[in-house]
Length: 77
Image (cartoon, one colour):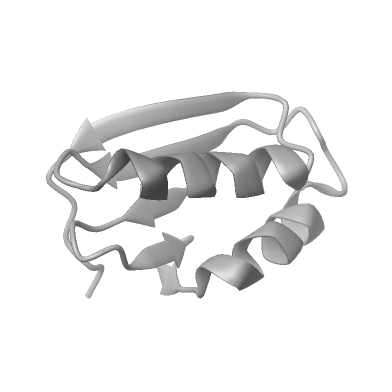
């Protein structure tokens, strides 16, 4: 699961991650099973540009099943 807060903080499995590290980390997670669904939880207030960057990283990592959920997202504690 990828989450993006309204402050454009990106999290992968509840751990903060820099956007430029998202693709390689997703590649590692998806390597055993490219059909594993990737869900992106994005705060509804983020800019479309940020959502597209996260989607592009997931696609470039080989994600074949993508879904987006928009809601108010806070940084995990």
